[in-house]
Image (cartoon, rainbow, N blue to C red; front, side):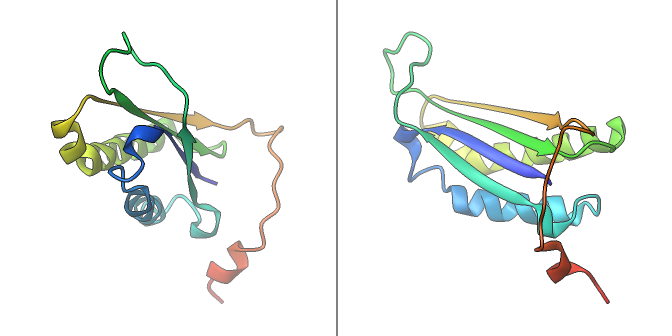
Length: 128
């Protein structure tokens, strides 16, 4: 963990430049020192069917979710959330200036018991 999801309307597929956003998000999360790099994942979910507002404009939206493991303080979660949303707004600023675009972001803390995982990538980033 953490896992970053970007749920996007398909009408901004090219302009959203999600690979660049994901590179920045992954690095920013690793730089916090509270998330292991080997667990950071970012992914896009493209929506080919949606309606927004009255449907009369070429609206677009990106809803992003960061899912994290249990156990971090509210203060650290809030700092990460504010940092990421600032990064997100900066990434989408030019696109928002040129079209109707709604951005939203939420952070979810996973259940401490009902959360199962196995990951051998962590070993690659452990220091000897």
